[in-house]
Structure formats: C-alpha cells, structure tokens
Length: 398
Image (cartoon, rainbow, N blue to C red; front, side, top):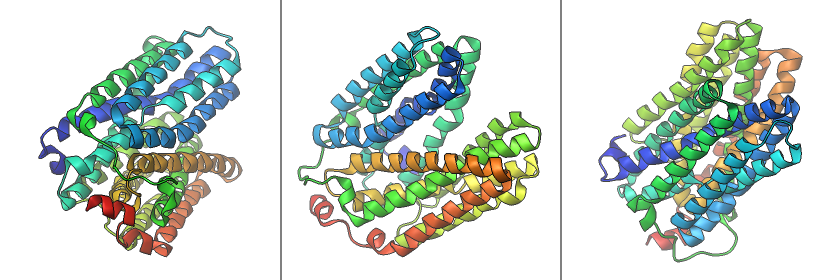
C-alpha cells in the first residue's frame, strides 16, 4: 500500500474508487433476489441476472473506449446517472412486472455501469511515476478491490432482509451514483486526458493484449467453477450455510495476497513470471479437491488459493500500459473485466453440470485445470508479454 499512500491524493483516490465499486459487487446478487421476489421464479431471476452480465461485458469496453476518446468525467457521470435511474426503476416495479421490462432495465444497467475500476487503473501511471512503485501500486489496488467483494454481497442481503429487496437496489444505486460522482470529482480523474495519438482498431489489435484477454478468460473459468464447487461442497456436508463464509475466506486470502505482493514490489514483470504466478493459482485451486470433504480444511485451502488471485491481477494490470496501443488503455482494462466475466459465466455453467453429475471434488479439479490452461497460454505466448511496448504506446511514452 505504500506505493499509493506515499503519493499525495492517491490514497484518497483509491479509497473513493473502492467505495464507487462496491455496488458492482452487490448488483448480480441484488437483481437475482429482487427479481425472484417480484416474479416468484428463479428461472426468471437467472435470465435477468444473465442479461445484466452480458450487457455489462459489452458495455465495459464500449464505455472504456469513450473514456479514451472523451476523458473520464462526462462518461462516468452520464453512466452513473443512467445506471442509477435503471436501478431505481427496477426497485419501483410492482410484483408481477413483465419479464421483458426487467430484462430491458437489467440490460440498460449493464450497458451504462460506469467503468470506475478501469478508470482507476488507467490513472495510476500518471499518479505513481516510478515504474517499480507502479507495480506495487497495481498490487495494492488489486488487494483493495477485494474489499468490494467481501462487503458487497453481505451488504445487499442485509439491506434486503432489514427493509426489502427493492430498498437494497436503491441503496446500491445511491452508493453507485455518489461514489462515481466523488471519483469523477477527484483532481487526478478530472485532469486525466486521453493520449493524443490513437489509431483505429481498439486495444485488442496487439498480440500482447489478446494474450492477456485469453489468460483472463481461463482465470474467469477458475472463479466461476470454484463458486459453484464451494456451494456444492457445503451442500454435500449438509452445511449449506457455510458456503458464504467459505467464499469470504477466499476473498480474504486474495486481500492478504495482494498486500504481500504490494510489499514485495508487485507481481510478475514478464510473460514467464506471469506463467509461474498462474501455475501457483492453478495448484492452489486444484488442492481444493483434496479438501472438499471438510469445511475446516476447505476454508484453510481457500485462504491459500485466494492468496494467488490478487498477485495474478496485479501482474496482468501492470502489463497493460505496455501491451495496449496508445489511447486505448481504459478500453483495455475494461476488456480484461469482460474476459473474466465471460470465463466466470462459462465456468459456472460447466461446473454446475459437473457438480450435478459427479459432486464437488471433480468440480474443483475443473477449476485447477482451467488455471493450468491459463498458465500454459502465458508460457506459450510469453514473448509478446515480455517484449518492448507496442510501438504506438512507446511513441506516446517518449
């Protein structure tokens, strides 16, 4: 955390960005619970949650591209207002509301959700000038982002139980709007300007960016599979209630791993180094298969496995400014978020089928196999990740 804390204004910027991102960790679960309440159908709730996930994956790169062309302030504020209105409208719908209306509002919400995380990561090179400190700053930011996933789901459930599921969406919308406005008002965000030189084609035209996206799709499969496997393992132990705390331990492990990585100067600096980090991610999550028969053992291994997550993100995020063409960095970070979302959706779907057919242990094996695929991609495509910056980015940096 020292890399951020030692830079004037950077710690406040990071804190505001975390608050602004807490609602994003609330929305999938919040929509699922609220739509189930309105319609009485888990199937309908799943369709609405799926529409939100798909539109979020599409909207992130689109809004990131707009930020790279127009700057952060207007895009963030407009997105926050539209997303907040969509949440308020969803919360105000009566029981029995048409499914098509719920789907449409979920799509609007996903398409307009402000890309605060991508904007924060795009700002870091301007805020933290020292290259070594920048790697540590990415690790600290990755650790801090875990706070959103530790606090968001319990918060939306708490508000839903204390008041109503609609009130939970209103609270999420209020925090989203207020947090995004506060982030957009920060001097570093207002001062951030897109690169002068930008060519057509977007961030994915470089081999390095395509490699990072492929890696994070595989990592997303790990995440989706583990979430399903933990729930399946808890059910098999006749302790369904422990699934939430177990997933919380997983997130806590990532937080600890991010802090350690930041203290050690950040994550990997090369493609080969990233492959080693991913190999650790794969091994840690594969080890969960051996612990599936005990809640205590599973919790302990989840902490260890989770400790590899934030260093993985930190390593990849630190490579983006070198991998992405000039003028596309925010879009590039948004694509990474989309890649994880795609992988997590696919991983959850595959893991559900495996868990139904064979139980939690093979499902954890699936997660470990996906991590192995990610490590192999990084190892086989290490040269684009280790080489010099893309010529457009290098020219802009000069």
